[in-house]
Image (cartoon, rainbow, N blue to C red):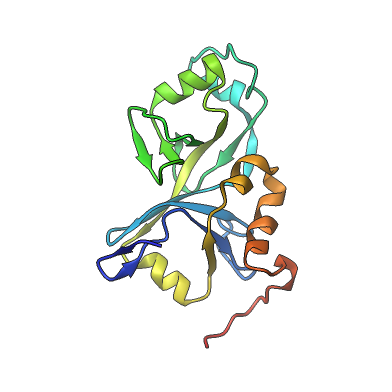
Length: 190
């Protein structure tokens, strides 16, 4: 983890919603943190597909879908902020016009050019397209962590890009050496 101004950055980490998460936007979610600093945090939910395919989204934004590679891939609910805006979490972290590079391999892009590339060539092959994102103001995520709303673990790209969405939450919990079914509804402080 990177340390920024005395706080630990959770960029490139998963947030695992605890079973007692009351917010329906985040119940049973796995969120990938793309940015975390003194100003707050930003991430995308990677295990909540919506009832829309990539082909349908590309059609809606008038981008030709010439490559059939991802045409039936689901679009994901990335979070409750700006749900009318599209984001692409992808690897490799190629240069795009509007990109937030998380690390040397993963980036979050919100520009039309990456959707055009996916529609034309199917590249990048490892890509999750989502509507909306998850955001926390300065200190908010730290407070939620102190209230045991989330577990955190270093992200594994294999979980995001190679596993089906319904297997991602359990796989991330297994990184901690536990089963989701064994998590308590009520957590305490040590």
